[in-house]
Image 1 (cartoon, helix red, strand yellow):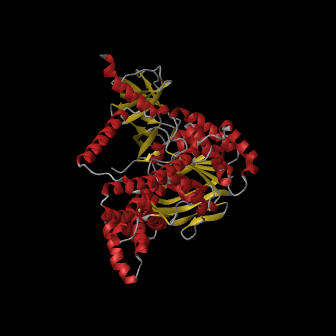
Image 2 (cartoon, helix red, strand yellow; image 1 turned 135 degrees about the vertical axis):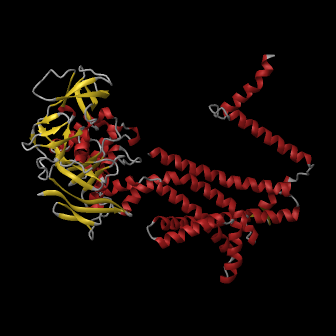
Image 3 (tube, rainbow over the protein chains, first blue to last red; image 1 turned 180 degrees about the vertical axis):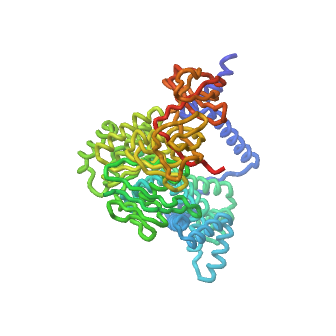
Length: 276
Length: 360
């Protein structure tokens, strides 16, 4: 009688310690939740009696043409997504730094402009901003759709970058800056040696989250017909009706990009923490 | 020639006036101390001298050079004024050694190794050069902050409430250590504190600041024994004020009878017949169970209201039965009374500290 009753708990503890999560009492609960999710997914898929055709997926990533491997539509879309996200991310850093500086400097006009920008961007949906930018300014100034997409994303994320920079700066106590002053350091040296080393470990995790979300948010440029990964996927689904296979594959691709990125930044952050 | 000279310094914080004409001077090698209650403006004085705050009128001179006035402001990093902050402001991302050498960044660190070793030894931090600030005790952090400020060899060192973050039982020991370090380097220092005992232990001269103005700038003995106003009398040391009337022969007649002594805080406005207030320090007041002890000095009955046991001594708060005035007395703790006991009180004053009575 004792053996069968103890079996599940033993299994769990083996599994939990294998995952080195044993010290967290909630681990068992989390594992149960995962099992429940897997069961729901399995039942959901088997319930609709779907005919899986995974074999038709690879050709949309890579295709052999005239004896040579060339990128399929999805790979091309992925490259556009990466290009778009990278450019938007770099631009968001610049815009965010500028806006944060303007909010912190004792110049009323600059502060009002920057605060207005941050509030507008935070309080309106990205979709609306994209439409406004593309259909109003894009047509007036003849802006290409790819540039409009990059600009819209950069302006949107830049507002959040600004808030992250500002919070990081404000988290360094004023006496630290005063102490550097009293020790004879000039403005630039105070920034380089006192403010940045202390603010950087604080702003890195939220910044990493933001970059991951830029990659995901970039999928919204589909609506102005930029051929990114999501747009390519929509086209393939429309042609082939392989909805589940395509969207699951696309999901995996996004995870494959975002997860290592988040992990890398985490390592950098740990490295910076260790130094102090 | 004074090293530091403040002349009628006025500072506003927004609409509020924080300093209202502060003037004093400090000589080379002196340790000065500003005392005052919270919000009196004492830290603002330090920030103005360090150049972290601008002043609105008056001027500040260091080594006969104006560093602050309404129109002139030397940048803080160019003043050669060191500062130890209340929270020490050690850089958490740097080791003790790097913290101490921080102000010497412009030159190569290894050329300073000998000076660093000397400074670590002076401040008793020999073994801690590689340690990070969060691993230090409060007293060690304070000495690192001190060493960091001393390392740049400032003309003037400012200390902002240097002991307020530390255990009260460590105050005395650390204050003496700090004074020894400062005196060994002949450092000119201005510190602020709300704790008079710290000031007594460390400072040569000092001032009491209240509502943005200095009431009295004097040596420590003068502040305690010759206070110029009732605020200084109440802030520096314990004491109680007793009403009385000035007599023609210099004595004062009050609830404790006729008080005779050398009148020190002689206010020219006080003439015979005027109502006055007499400052009675707790060691001026002697208690006895009956009045027969000394017939030559007058005594008065009183009731014990509170007692505070302090080990070797006990501090009594008393109410005079005749006039309802409150006085305090410090006695050796073998003299034991309980609240509610009736005692006889005698004043043993060597000198009279007199103030004009308040208008009523």
